[in-house]
Length: 80
Image 1 (tube, rainbow, N blue to C red):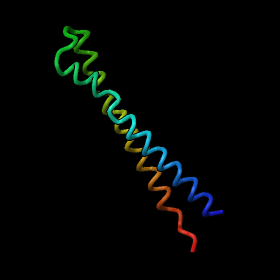
Image 2: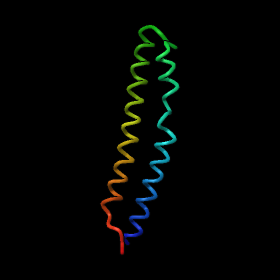
Image 3: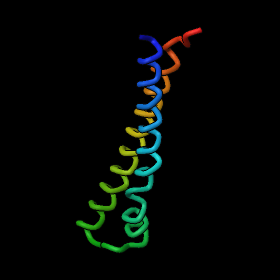
Image 4: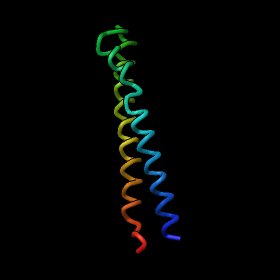
């Protein structure tokens, strides 16, 4: 039973890593546009601040999910 759980968690960890890799840069284009003043004025400033905050949050959540899965995997002993 432990092997099945370990394999399931390994699969989850691998899937999370792929999702993280696929979505890590999802907000990069918007952040680059805002860094180049693509949208100015108070609304543009608010949007720029928000999109950068969203990028940091997305990356933090992805990092935490991958880290958590790897921690869980490491906590399950290998079957001899």
